[in-house]
Length: 342
Image (cartoon, rainbow, N blue to C red; front, side, top):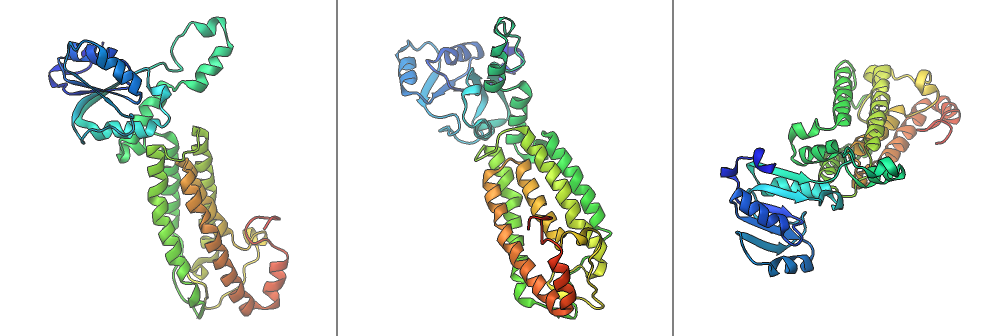
C-alpha cells in the first residue's frame, strides 16, 4: 500500500522509527529497494534485530525519535508503525522528521486512531472512552506535522490561530483610527520610561517563545480548548486595551504625562476600573500565550504584572498631584484593575 503513494525510484534512504526487532525495516528495504536505517530507544530490541540474518540493506541504531543521529535533509521517507500513540512529545518528533527529510520526502504513520472502526467498543462501550483518551485522531496527526513544519501554512493549520489572526487584524484596523501618542505633554514622569523598554523586551520574547514551545511540545498545556480560551481572552483583552484610547483621544499617551487641558475621566468603563487599558494588556498577553498552550510563555507573561503595577503607581502619583482631592475621591470608589477585587 505504501508503494502506491510514493515514487519508489526516489526513495533511499529510509528512516524506520521505533523499528523494534526490525520487522518493517527489512520489508521496506526489500519492497522499495532502498537502504533503511532502523531506530529504536530500546537496546534490547536493537540487539534482537541484529541477531536476525541480514537479507536486505538495513542498518540499526539505538536512538529516540526526537533526537535522531542523522544529518539535515538526508532521508526520503520516515516510517512509523504503531509508534505514534506512544510518543511522549509528538510535536518534537514531527519537527525532527522535518529536519531529516529532504524537500520531496514522505512521512508514513501507521497507527491506530480514534476513527478506526474497531470491534471492541461494540461489545464493550467503556473501551471507547479509553481509546479516545489514548489514541490521537487523524486530524491531530496531520495538524501536528503541518504545524511542526513551520511557516504561515503551519500557523493556519489550527482554527484557533485563524480566529486569533482575525481578531488582531480587526483590532489593528481599529487602532488606525485612534489618537494615541507618545506626547510628554505639559508634565511627565520621565523616571518611568524604563517600562516601555521592559514591555518591548518581554513582547519580543512572547513573539517567539510560545509558538516555539508549542511547535516542539515543550511545557505545553493539553487540549484544543485551551487555544480557544486564549482566543476569547485575547479578543476581550484587545478590546479593553483599545477602548480607552478612543475614550481619551489625544490625552492617551504611552508616557506617564499630564496633557494640555487634561481632564479626569470618571464615566463609562472608568466608573468601575481606573486602568482598563492595562487590564486589557494583561488579558491580551495571557490570551496570546494560551493560544499556543505555552507553560513557559505563562511565566514570561507573569513578568508583565510587576511592570504594569509599577506603571500604575507612577500614573496614580502624577494624577493625584494634578487633581488632588478629586482624584482621591475617585480612587476611593473604584478598583485599579479588576472590579471589586483589586
